[in-house]
Amino acid sequence: MPTSPSARPTTPPTVWPARGRHVGSAAEDTVRRTLRRNKDGHVLDDFQELPDERAGDGAPGARIFEARWRAGGAVTVRARLMLAPRSAGGQEWTLLAEAEEAWDPAWPSPATMFWPDDPDVTWDRDIATGLRLRGINTLPDDDKAVRRVIKEAGRGAWNIHVVVHEAMTPDHRGRVPLAGRLPASLRHRVVEHRAAPQQLRVVNWALEDFDVQVPRGGAVILPGTPPPADYDAQAFSVRTVFLDGTEPTELIAAVTAFAALPRPLVDGAEEALRTLREDWRLLTLEEELARERKLVAMYAEALEAMTQSRDLYREAAERAAEALAAYRESAGSAPALPSPSAAPVPSPLRGLTRALERFRLPGRTPRPTPGPATAGTDEANEAGRADEAGGPGGPTGTDEAGEAGGSSKAGGDGGAVTDGGR
Image (cartoon, rainbow, N blue to C red):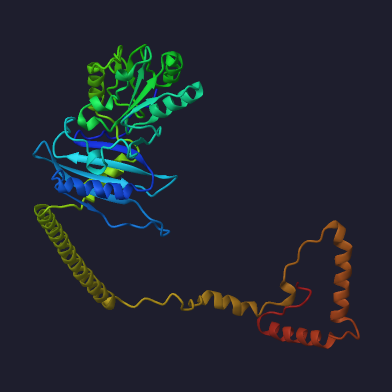
C-alpha cells in the first residue's frame, strides 16, 4: 500500500489541479487560439502570455499563460498554464486554477479555457501512463504489459484512474466513455481503463500492490500515490457497472466523492500553487491599485524600521565616544608605570657576592672524594702538581714564591696563612 500522506500539505478545496501531455509541436499556437476565441466569446474576462524566460544555457524556457473568468456568474477564477519545453515529440503541461470559493464540480473545466474540446486535438494524454483522458483505454493483451499499466496508473496522482471490468464484451452502447457523463470539472481529470472479461485475474493480481480489487463486472477507483487520508477501498469500489447504454450513476457518484476528498499535493503541485498565488500578473485596475497601496505600506514600514535602527545606532555611537573619552581622561591622571621592556635593577647582595668571589683562593675549591679505583690516579696527579708548583727549575716556581711572600706579609698584619695550615 502507498505510504501515508500525512507529511504532505493537502490540496485546498478551492484549487483545481491537472497535468498532461500534448502530442505534437503546435501546443503554444493551440493555446493562443483557444484563449483568443474564449475571450472573443466572452467566456474569459482576460488572458495574457508572460514573457519568455530563457534557461541558463540560453535554451527556450517554459511558456506561461494566465487567464481569468467568472464561474457560476460571480465567482472569480484565476488559472495558470505552464508549457514545458518540447521533448520527444510533445510538451508536458501543468494547469492549476483557484477560485474565490470552494470548487464546484458543475463549473466549467479549466482545461477547456486553454485547450479545445476537440477529440482530434491530442492534448489530453495522462502524464503517468500516456493514455487519453477523454476516451476509453483498453488494457493490452500481454499480462506483463497489463501489470505495467496498472502499476503506472496506481502511482499517478494528478489524475483519477478508474478500472472497469467488462463482464461480457459490450456493444456500441457500452463503448461510451465515462468522461462524457461526469460533471464538467471532472471530464478532463479521469482516465478510464477497460479490462476484457478474461483479464479479471491478471488485473486483480496487479492491483494487489495497492490493496484494492475490482469486482467482476464492476469498477474500482485507484487511490493514487500518495493516497488520500480518508480513502476506503470498499467505499470506492462499485460492484456492478451496466454497459448497456444506461447511465452508471453509482460509478459517477463514487468518482465525484473521490474527487472531493482532501488529497495531498503531489510532486510539482506545491510549487505551481505558490507561483499562482505569489507571481500572478493578470491584474485588474482595482487589483493593481490595491497592490500598489500594499507596496507603499510595506515600504513605509521598512523606512520606519530603518529610521529607528539609525537612531539606535547613533545613540550607541555617542555612548561609546563618551566612554572612550572618560577612559582616556582617567588614564592620563594615573601614575606612570615602568615600561615592561626596561632592564631589571640588579640586587646589591648579588653584586657583593660577585666581588667576594674574585678574592677566593685557587686552592679553596672543594674537590670530590676519590674512590678506590681512582685513588692512585689522583695521588699521581697531586704529585705532578706539586712538582710544577715548587720543584726546582719549574716554570712557575718564581711566581708561586712571590705569592707565598705576599701571603706572609698579609699574615703579619692579621695572622699568617701558610700551606701547612691548609
